[in-house]
Length: 294
Length: 290
Image 1 (cartoon, rainbow over the protein chains, first blue to last red):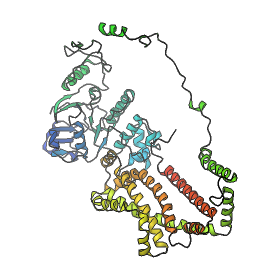
Image 2: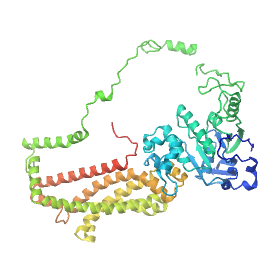
Image 3: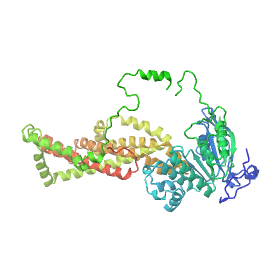
Image 4: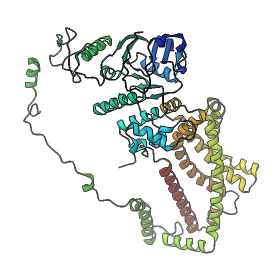
């Protein structure tokens, strides 16, 4: 485990713990909050004797923003479900904070509850509407508190889902590809919102995504999962807000794409700056027997 | 395009538009508001029934429908007025409505309770569902004689008949509704910290509501049907009795009045369910027609 230096912004409300504490025996109990938000060791999850998680080891510091990348089917969503407590047919040690919250890829709002009732759903006691409104204000959705979920746009529904997670005041926020279903413009807004919420709240975040750029824009540390293990990790020691034009950022992106087995090609519609790291990346292959225009 | 493909394109028969410059036929997108002359919905809904009555009156007036086979709407209205005036119809309706209400409530209680037991737990499903599915395939009209033997000829067999019909419909639909709840929402509820009872109350039951409403529609229809059967056997009051009596005296007008009353009550029941759906299912993002 690479002990990444503290990349927490100084305005964080929570003190950054020294990383060394994470490995100290006294911090083993995550519920004590002694600098560790997640501790996973030797985690195994099998589906019909197929090992989806095969001895995962993962530590997340309190307040750290970690992105988990991986190709589809690599087990990253399964890991998130284990951390959220939804999947408990596991072997190995998993320590997570008691207060944790999940935002899923689909907003999963109860269609029969108005937005504010969705937000306070599951809170202990009889929560006041004000509690929901406060969380909705945080995501800029307080004006839709009385709306039915069916009347929300995709971005609004996702923000409501985020408010529902935030109202629980989590020490660990689990985001399962929360921007995957959003259009490009809404996604940018939503990513900024998450960055802002994290900066103000200072909770640990685990963002599961398949978007390398998203991971590099938001996270302190990027993990790459493959074959049921964390195969690679990179600390992103770039100042925030991150600049996609920064050559260091571009280099990290190329490196991670390589790790994910995707060679960077030119002319991709989503490429901002294309540093040609891979020698052959700029060459379009036109094998014989196939038309040059296809 | 490669040279070869370009050459191939050149061999395309004339008339097929291949490149820029070919004129494209444009059609105007007509705005809905400009095209449609809107009639109020209640008027549109009334067109069918009113038209039917008008055709009927015309046929009766023209002698196509003899009065001893089917009385004309005007005659029927007169008969209905008489039955209302002497108190026969109101008292019969009161008795029948009470039977339907009691049967509906007791049948619904049993049906919904069983559906909850088998819908919410797998143990309950194993114990209840097979039994109910088996009993369901018995034609309930066929058990009328047994009900009379068991329960006598008073109110009990009639109410029991209605309750049985209602219970099965509600059981099936509520059970299907519960099992049709999106597992992703249940999972979301779990992740929000809802316990078993919280999940049932906030996720499963509201999710089963559309199914329950469908069940209620079927149940109401069945309740009227069961009422007719029940009241034509050994009854001395109620709408079914009135009809049975009219049959013996060849009073087609009275029979039709009773049928019209049934139809009106059915319409009223439908209106109640619609109102209930509008109140309880307003969250539902479903197709509502164009």
